[in-house]
Amino acid sequence: RMPDNFLDCVITSPPYWQLRDYGYEGQWGLEPTYQEYLEHLWSLMDAVYPKLKDGGTVWINLGDSYSTQSGTNVALSKGLDVKHYTARLQNRGESGKLIKDKNLPNKCLLLIPHRFAIGCIERGWVLRNDIVWAKRNGTPESVTDRFSKKHEYMFFFVKNEKYHFDLNAVKDRNEQGGRNPGTVSDFWDIPTKPNKLNHFATYNESLISKPILAGCPEGGIIYDPFMGTGSTAEAAFKAGRKYIGSEMSEEYCKIAEKRLKALTSQLNLF
Image (cartoon, rainbow, N blue to C red; front, side, top):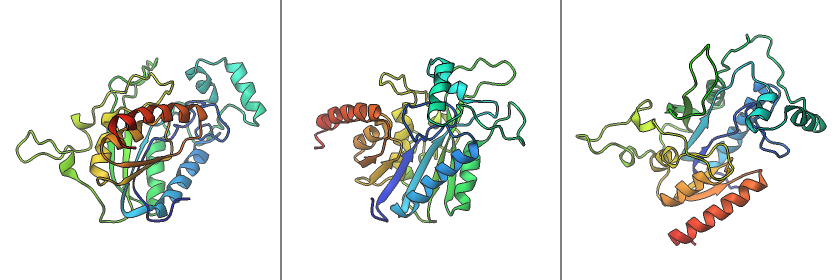
């Protein structure tokens, strides 16, 4: 329902594949194959493209998965009884388990973030950066035959060669001339944020504020298609930007509305 050439910036983190059940019909992330999951994400990027201004920017945070995961992992991640969880999915016409790709060996990292990025390039997007978000306090993994994953990716896309990007807004001015922080540095070494809002994937504001300051002009409109409990909205308002969010979970919408009502009242925005 948005007009074309409307958004200045899109910042979001879609549900990761085969990781969690958010408890509502039509959710993304529980597709039986990672290919179907990627098709959903690409359909989002196709829909965003005409709505984004020619000089707009898009920032997508995405994590990876392994070929040996299944819907059972989703149940365990939420502390649910596996049998009851699987039965609920079967009642919805789903198996609760992934369809194994015969071309992939067991335990193989799927490289979903990079498959996603390559598909976006093939659809006309310009990929400017693949930023490494270092998560030193990320969720512990009980594995002994590989290293624990302590990073995710933030992809920075644009539509054209010319676009809004304010490096001065985020440069380290403590050094002579101010340095470009780069894609792998202390600048992106950001711990995950303790969660008190009943949402497993709460952003740390320090992570979101950097794309906002660099990739969206003051007063510009930021859109988050997976709003969750409103972390991007909060960071956008604090930075003097406008915001639109979409969220399928009624529970998260209520949390976000309560959170943002308090914030906007405090900032005298409305």
